[in-house]
Amino acid sequence: MKTITWSVSITLMLAFAATVVKGFTIDGVLDAQYGSAIVTQQLNTSTSDNTEGLIDRANGSELDAAYGIVSNGVLYLFLAGNLDSDDVADNITFDKLQIFFMTGPGGDHTLGTNYNAAADFGHLNRMGIAGNGDPNAIGQPGLTFDTGFAANYWIGVNIGGLGSSPTGNVNYEVVCSNCAGAFLGKFFPTNTPPGNILVNGTFGIQAALNNSNTNGVTVDPSGCGASATSHPESVTTGVELAIPLSAIGSPTGQVSICAFITDDQYVTVYNQILGTITSNVCQGSFGESSAVDFSTIPGQHHFTVSVPPCNAFQLSPASASYGSSGGASNVAVVDFGGCSWTATSGVSWVTITAGGSGVGNGAVTYSVSSNTSINARTGNITIAGQIVTQSVTVAQNGIILPPLGSIIVDGTVDPGYGCPVAVQQLSTTYGKNTSTNIINAGGSELDAAYGLVLNNTLFLLLAGNIQANNNRVHIFFMTGPGGQNTLTNVNPNGFLIPPSGASRC
Image (tube, rainbow, N blue to C red):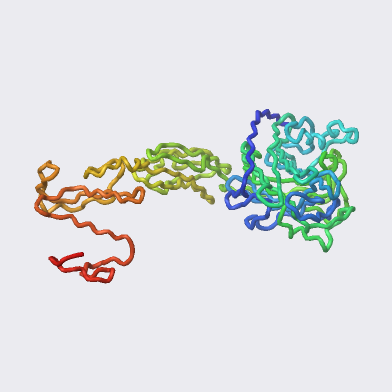
């Protein structure tokens, strides 16, 4: 057995909206992106049928189907069904969902001892050798998985507590003696989402539970094969997880999963386990947990999710913000498939300065130029692999204009105007001014225009000079419909403009 010692610091955040990750909404409701079920339940549940139809509670337990897909370095796992929540209606202690992951060599084929007590108070040991000293499990070898399956990681989910506020819990463990384990946090589901969602800040694992399923397999104390009234393929609510591959050993190729339900003390393994179990198995439960040997029970008691090549890298951070003066930073690329990738900037003001391409893990360094406009702007750095493309969002503020009082209307441009909105492209034919006198000029020209609106006032500065010979600057404003594209002597308000020299009123 491998020995790993971790110092684990847990940060917990409860999301206040259904968490959307790369097209998946982690809320305990099946998304279309999962596609077809990998496996469906072949046995009726031996616990009881859920009849309540509520998100936060159930009076029966069942696992109806498993859905899974790996995308961009995250395993999305959906287990359709419901978990008994210790409901007052049935007065039965709550049940727990046990999920074991095989992601590489060195796992435990038979559960042993000394599993971390930080994860659900060390209850995982109850399924190990001799049931952690339980008198009913003396001499038992420990729960044994299918031939060829050895667990590396475990996640446990439950919802329990009598009364009006059931509490959900999620635990995590590296499956080996004296290895790391952690309580990931609580969630407080209600009959109105999004209270059924948990986001763990340390491992990036997200979890959600929707307990409202009342369809699925039917109750049968003997646990025989699903009857004509059972519809496990129709269940679209249950436990949903988003698990970064880095949290389960960064596997390549595939992840194998063994998921089943036990009572709250891990003593009894119910017959609700997902795999290709032959439907002629009649078993109300698999019995004492530390004595269960799945390899001796007909069928397969696990399923597999593929990890596609070159389709599993993560970027960190995935977004960055800068002030108007700009700056520089880098993006870490974690490439689980060890494949090639390239980085490109989608805007001229973000420049890739190093790490424009790589193979496997790497880093992209970039710089952000200053923004001399008053407008904020957003651009993307695109990092593309053989199949998948991801983006880093770069946001930058514009310059902050000074308050209105700092713009002095005196014929001189103030810094608050910022850059000109237009500049002259032609030389002047009205003479070149050589005088520095504020009043008199020896030529006329328009060099640039500056303008901005502050507090419902248009500030306009036309840079240049006007010769003291009665040359004039004409300024026309278009502020809405109804103006004149060609100047006429007809006022748009419907009356004639008096000819030159006529009296005006």
